[in-house]
Structure formats: C-alpha cells, structure tokens
Amino acid sequence: MEVRFINFGDNALDFELLLWSRNIFLVEQTKSDLRYRILERFREAGISIPFPQHDVHIIPPKA
Image 1 (cartoon, rainbow, N blue to C red):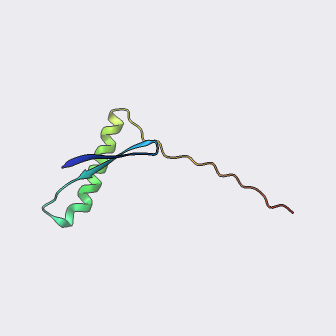
Image 2: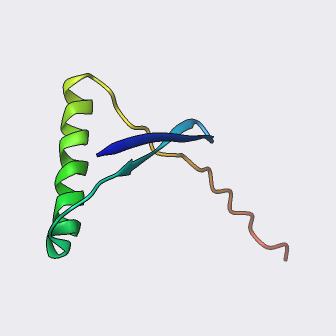
Image 3: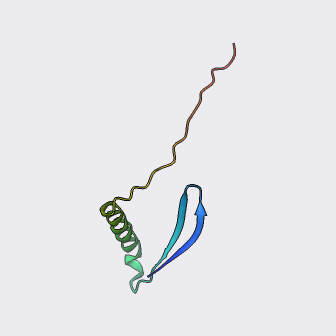
C-alpha cells in the first residue's frame, strides 16, 4: 500500500491511497474496509472531517 499527498484542496489536504490486490473480485470490499478503518483511526485520534457548508438565499420574484 502507498499513500501520496497529491494536493492542497479547498480547506483540505488531498491524499491518494494506492493498493494492490491478488483477487480482483475483492477489491471494492477491500477499499471499503480500508475507508472504515481510516475513519475509525481518525475518530480514535480525535480527528473529525468537517463537511462544506453552503448558504442558500431564496429571493422571491418581484411582483
């Protein structure tokens, strides 16, 4: 497995996780398992991932 730091995003650090599998049929499950494990480790370390917030302003049409 390899982790690359690929970019500075908007309010984020972007990483890419590369992995190899001998069984192509298990790749998607393996990726899901890794994501859950990463999330678990973040929580153990007190790291939270904020989601972007957007304000929506609705302007009524003029009569």
